[in-house]
Amino acid sequence: MELSYHGHSIIQLENEGSKMIVDPFINGNELTDLKVEDVKVDYIVLTHGHNDHVGDTVEIAKANDATVVAPVELADYLSGQDVEAIGMNIGGKNSFEFGTVKYVHAFHSSSFTDEDGSAIYTGMPTGIIIEAGGKKIYHLGDTGIFGDMKLITELNGPFDVAFVPIGDHFTMGIDDASHAVNEFIKPDVTVPVHYNTFPPIKQDAQTFADKVKGDCQILSAGQYVEFKA
Image (cartoon, one colour):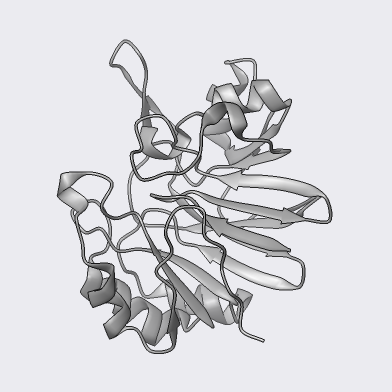
């Protein structure tokens, strides 16, 4: 199983010949190494409906005949764009060729801004728990800190890796994110995400890493997670 980071909140996973991508915001993302036309995946998994997470989902899904997995209201919207979409909701778990996906809460908001400027409600924001290749991965999505991160970990962990937003302004900042990691989630490996893409979320990831207990991997776009043995 291979797991890589590609800027902002994008991760890619390949397991047992099946490929998936999370939150493929590529066009307009100066920090990614990806090009839409080069992405080859079987599944796209979305945490919520904001444009910097839905990103290029429709184009990628159509080019690859890929299935989108998303919160149900967002999946309904994407189905209307002629995309095959499976709607899920918080607490639900489903199996796919690459592994399993479970949706859990995130404290944020969720809407998609269409080309005409109208905001479309896309359901509750979420985090996702992926199990693949004998590993448990927690992608927190966009969120502030909340105490039930500890309960999520008790019920679903321990986690081999957690992708944690640190950008502040729209999500947790460094202090809240490091507290969430150290006191609630305690993953083997922590990877900071959702920072430096736009001016309001400029952060020093090393400052975050210095506050985190354990293995914190600051990944550049295109780098792979190094799992603990």
